[in-house]
Image (cartoon, rainbow, N blue to C red; front, side):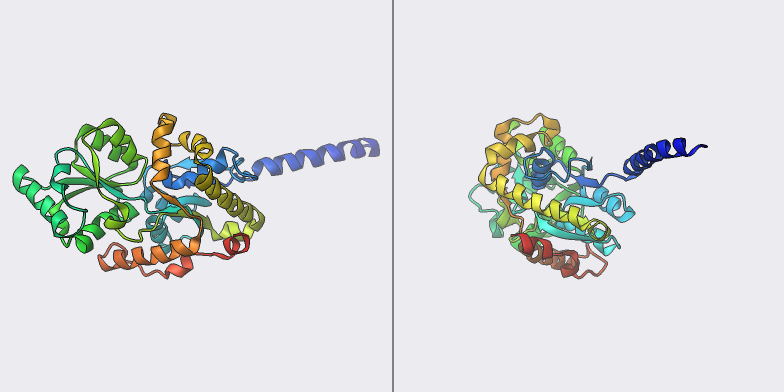
Length: 337
């Protein structure tokens, strides 16, 4: 081949090689659930922050925590917007993940349908009055109240059992617990297949909008004081491989949190697209947003996660030891706050 053709082809080959290399680079895999606790992911993905590190990422939707745990353990996900419960399980089973920021806290509440709700009248959801409500229901109906929640290991499931054991001093056998994903929880409530649920938004507000007989009988801090929420969980290998990308992710997360707190109407447009298949009304989305405290501070989340870890270890849910502090890396957040 003549020197002329070699010189002419060389730049073309460089461009082709660069193109192949760029196309071969895998997109960052990001897991989330369609719940109000993951709102920051939706705000960022819709381009409402100064930078959008999720623009070229692959967002993967999950219906429950155990699915995300398996994806983290197997190495499928690089990032997850996930609750403290599933994150602890993943870390304890060897996933190299750390929380870099929090999402929110105080989200799980106890909702009762019309056949159970009247028994809680005159109680504040704690103490002997609430325990008596469950007992009277069982005596009148000839069966235990059926309460659904997310799978064992999740924060809502832990909140339900914390309430039974520590808040009303009832046996776990005082109810029939049904563990399932978010969509299944909503359907069970709407069809009356269960009597109530310890669950996150938007499930609570969806059901209350469609079933006038439903009401909140135990608020979040009566259910499980200091319950942790979800957060931004990042694989350590990604932190080492692309620290600049991770910094952009945390910066966008902080901006998204500020927008959710200060301009909920603007943020709701983005959040709405990811909840309930994008079919929920703006009113329901805004109400769900009001029911949580958006907070990016990982220090607060670490403290609450330690409370969750102690309780779940006590009742035998977490069988593998875990140093909760090792699940958190606050350096980037501390530099940016």
